[in-house]
Length: 126
Image 1: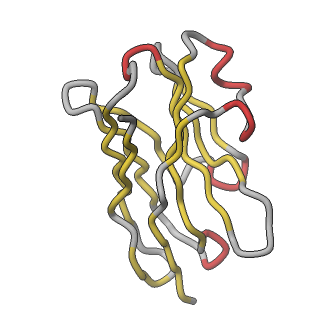
Image 2: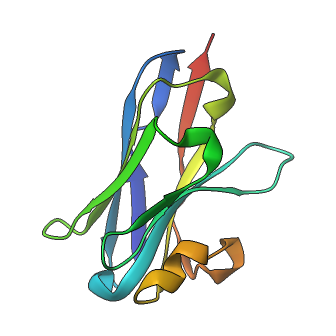
């Protein structure tokens, strides 16, 4: 059974930091493209960061220089380090995965991802 379980969300003031984690199981972790998305009620789900099987990454412009996506293969865990948080970063954050090897991962969109977690809420106050 595929499971993606996020944790690490919470409420912080602007300028603060959070680290999200996503524990993965039940699918080919080493051959999967993995990503973080976020969603605000009433708006479309937005891609935040993606990491391919070779460790290459891609970020949406609004988080470049502030967020870092990484993975610990030994722990089958995906991370999102979020620094210098802004109120506009407030959203439900979801991790996602799809069996996909190599650089095509960096162009993947919402519809490409097969597995999704339930999400963890991040709230940033001004």
